[in-house]
Length: 121
Length: 106
Image (cartoon, rainbow over all chains, first blue to last red; front, side, top):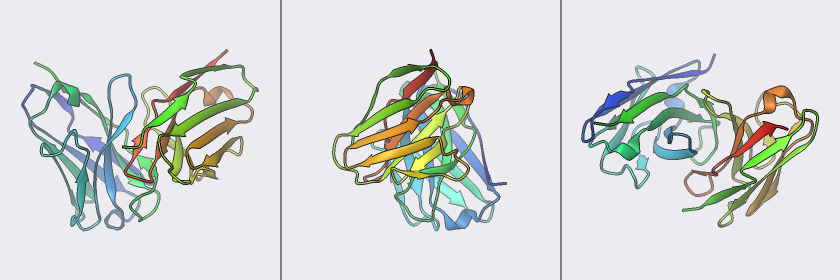
């Protein structure tokens, strides 16, 4: 079964850090770009970041650029999101997502269950 | 950034009826448009990509149409499990989502 499982969310104070993980199984992880998408409380979905299969290309939304770092370990089939200098507006459910093909600009057909990040003092 | 606007915000429909959801892009996205369904506490589920191609396992009652800036998702005969929030997403230039249409029981 194709599956993504996120972990690492929690409550953190403003200015703090968290590292999210996304464990992939059931498909050839190293063959896909991978993405992070977040959902603000009671609101819609916002794309956060992407990384290509060999980590040579990473891209970020302007709202997280310079604070978040996406990475992956293909030997562990795991995607990461290091989040530093967190702000209240980063409070959201964070999903990892897989594109439906190995191309870059496509829709996402596999999503994790999400992990909740709450930034509050 | 391409802004996606969905209408209506809420759609009240009786089971068995047809539902028509709209999505407009602020500039052309060709047919690089997807639709997702999301239920409370769950991740989004891909329904349609390429504006009109059903994803694997999606029932035929879901159909998508449109190109450029105007898109439609039609659910031909609503089933109880279809009451949810639906999002459109463009992937022509980065990825942006609409704000969602909630389909509720009338």
